[in-house]
Image (cartoon, rainbow, N blue to C red; front, side, top):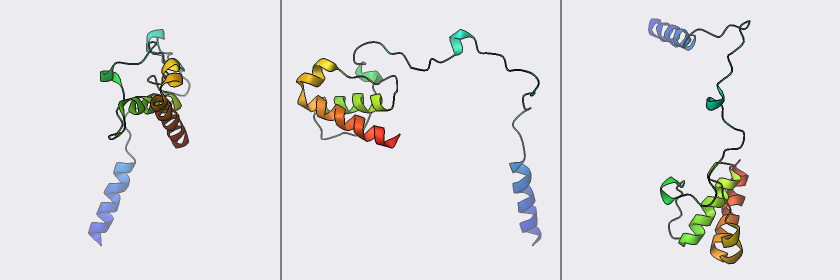
Length: 111
């Protein structure tokens, strides 16, 4: 019985600890410098990203064009900085188009 009470006391006391002082409610927070603020819409360079920076998905067994389309579509649906739709390729490459459409639809449902 004593062990159970001791363990409960430890659990409750650990759960009530803080990590540091809380900010004062009367003191306004300092705004971040312009260089540290994040824009609402992430910026990325135009065009597809190099393979080393692309997110990875387990799409083994699919053709490369379908994998690339899926990644572009999914990242576009998630509104990450990796989102991209290669309009020329989308219109001319059916595998890329299928991958982009599938990736966009599936990742949009997960949001």
